[in-house]
Image 1 (cartoon, one colour):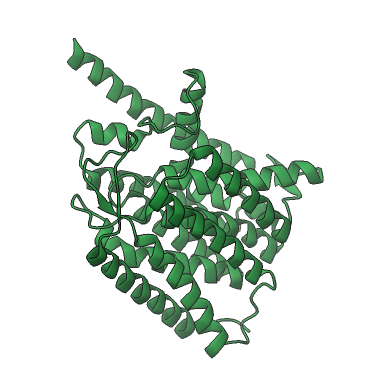
Image 2 (image 1 turned 180 degrees about the vertical axis):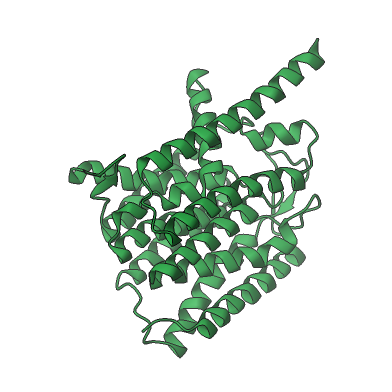
Length: 350
């Protein structure tokens, strides 16, 4: 049975309302996170927005099981939810007690392995002209790294007002559209839940005077749901050429994350120590408003989302050529913008 358009509307509306109400409550409760030396904020900020994402995810599944139980969701969905609950609980603990980075990464790593074992690892890569078959171990490691990087990377990017929520709203909306086009029901439900729960957070999170953040609870869960949904899209459709859909949709984030990490390796910095090396942090340090920074990332996201959706609609194979050209484009923009900021900083110093 396929979901009706009215079903999709009501599920999305329900997720938005639940997330909006819980975020409003968290603003009133003021469950706060104290800024550390990585933060670009100087005052405490409520961080309970992630609870709205958790509630919306649970609500959507209750709604489906109650009113449209015929929908053919993946039989592994309950196990995915267990992994999501572990990630959420880890985020709650981190928001309250600030867990050490190495300990948090170990837990995320084991959750990533569990999720990949349930979905099944990637078995081949879309090459330049044909598919490249992968040994089981290589596919397992690659799939685990994809989820691990997404969870941690999206958590790193949740530092500017509205940045993570608006960008991941766009990415998850695009993934939902693609899943709808291809008839991947479980992927669509997970993407739909994520995008509308983020939409419920945005009225309180976007803008220069943000009232609440997703916190580690929300950003870790967002990274997990999105990365897992991208793998599920391949599994549900059986089309291995869709493997690069997930990376393309969040490429502006990934390019910033990887180039920043490479820079820290070059300077022999720790992956787990706090820092302010990301492009969005450098832009805000130049007195560019949080809103403008978020809109800049959003504009880049619109470009890559449009490209990806266009390829799916026109049945254009998303080969390694498309991925490589997109990576070069995103990395070049990131490099030259950061270089311009550094030159201006040096100029002011002289």
